[in-house]
Image (cartoon, rainbow, N blue to C red):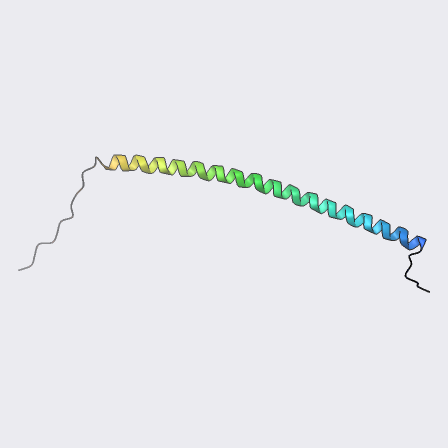
Length: 83
C-alpha cells in the first residue's frame, strides 16, 4: 500500500537524484559563465580593432583631402551649340 510517505529506500534514492541534479545544474552554470566571459573578452577585442580601423580610415581620408586641395580641377567641356 502506498501511503505517500517515503520509505528508507525511496528516501535515499530521492536524495541521490537531487544531488545529481544539483551537480548537473552547477556544471551547466559554470560552462555558461565561461562562455559569457569568453564572449565579453572577444567583444572588447573587436571594439578595440574597430576603433583602430576607424582611426586609420579617418587619417587616410584627412590626408587625401589635404592632398586634393592643391590639385588642379578641370572643368568639363560643353558640347558646341548646333546651328
